[in-house]
Image (cartoon, rainbow, N blue to C red; front, top):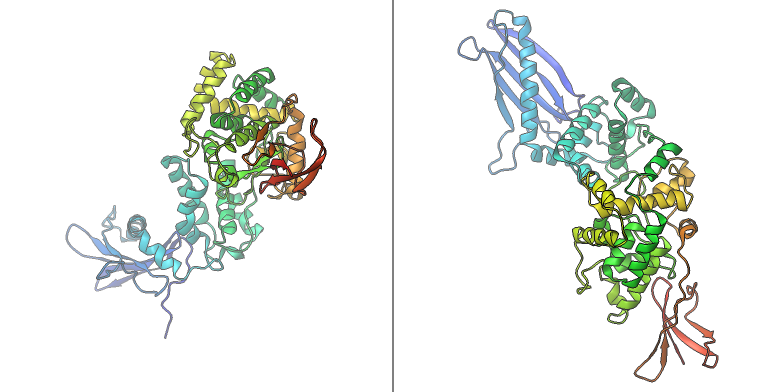
Length: 511
């Protein structure tokens, strides 16, 4: 018995036939759109308002018969078509009218029954068999949700149209079988601009990274436009970047009042995070290796094919402010309780997350206190972005270039700005800056902009059992829980330390 299941078809018309029966024309054939197979049959009526009429139906990939709806009872997914030839006296042109009407009706039928079509395809499509056209149909929306969440509806429609147009040019065969030569042939034929070419590359790479297809990406990744030294300097000279003196004044303001909002500002200005990102972090997301060496565990799973683990080291200014805030929280909460608290919270409620707009508002207040000219604040408003966020993040990027000496085209700079990496693969492997050695590399860079050392006295508290409790912050405590220490006024002796999960000494008390 012949297998009636639908074979993959390239986009367009296939197996068109036209016959004459009893003096009337009959047209039938197949049409493919986004990997979906349609069958149509149309005949000449001989009278009435419609000289031609017919049916268009979707063919199930699973059964090879007409696809059925999911309702009860199920119905065939089909529609009537009424092509209208422009010249009724010239039958040779009637096929053009049929093709035009079939293409229009297929697009409508596809949009109306997308749920049934996807369900039918998912029953037989696997990562090894998915074709480019079917990938767009099944996974484009998921790709947009994960990678283009902030895009407008208009831009998403444009992206969807680009994906459908370009992927329809690929042969309808498994994505795993395409070579770089195949990809180059398609891309050379259409000559997309850099942004659209990057969209094509990123969608294919997204399917690979997400396990939705197998093989290798046949599309060459478009290289980003290199930034010249003059362009980098021009960007640094813009009004929306704080100079070192203003940053120093802001640092002293935050040190004087290291509350949860100060932590948010520190994460933006000396961590490069947006207000929304800063407000999402909890204390468990920090790696507190010392009071000066603090990293933030930051992952971007929506960036398909690019760096996913963006764990990066904060500037020492931010590290110290966070450390002071952590020490203050220890007066009220246990270490395990603190881990679940948001880093950025309202002043009088450490358990609630502060809204990003309120953090931006607080940042602007601080900028005004530091004497930032209102002209700078107004200039930033022209970008339709929160003033504090734009100034802080741009200043962070400028610090990496001009204070830490990083090349704006280097992998380390792009990594610390949370951007996808480019360049030498061995240098820019997505984990290269987030493992232990990579954290040390980042720390070596941010130390070049370390503030002046602030000497703090060691606080002493008396516990209920009579022991004197000292809060210490030694540089390295990863390997020792017990140790000996000499403190003026006390005899040398053994101390017992409490160390958190990151290896940071929290408290020590005399035996």
